[in-house]
Length: 86
Length: 86
Image 1 (cartoon, rainbow over the protein chains, first blue to last red):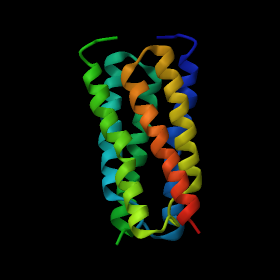
Image 2: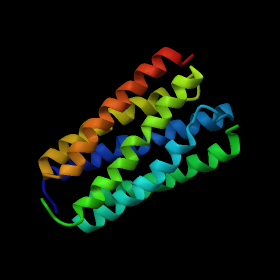
Image 3: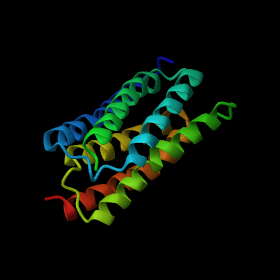
Image 4: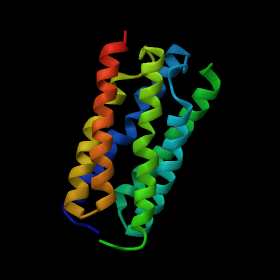
């Protein structure tokens, strides 16, 4: 569980997880989420919840850490979509 | 590598990977990607490439499979953004 390649999983998570931050920022800045697909936000939230389960069962620290954060960010995007989507 | 919980990783990947499909569809339907953050698309593409590396090194079949597809879809979203983004 503390293999050297774990670092790659941590760096990978920085990118895929925090990719949602500039997307959230853009939606809030434009105050518009018309182009954001609701299905995208719902699938992302449900999917990260399942990845979290997989991470716990397989003992993968990067998967656990990043999917907790991703789930929260996907949730925030659902809120933004319901607020600013048409 | 063939643990029972691998199925959860496969189902998780169906959701997080294919979440990008309705998003791509929406952008092409509206012919507009103004609200899509370029940073989001670039971080997603680079991140999935790193997850793929992590998946290969840790022998995780779900991570390998889904991140190959995710990388292609993220690439398609970069193309869509460059085409329809303002």
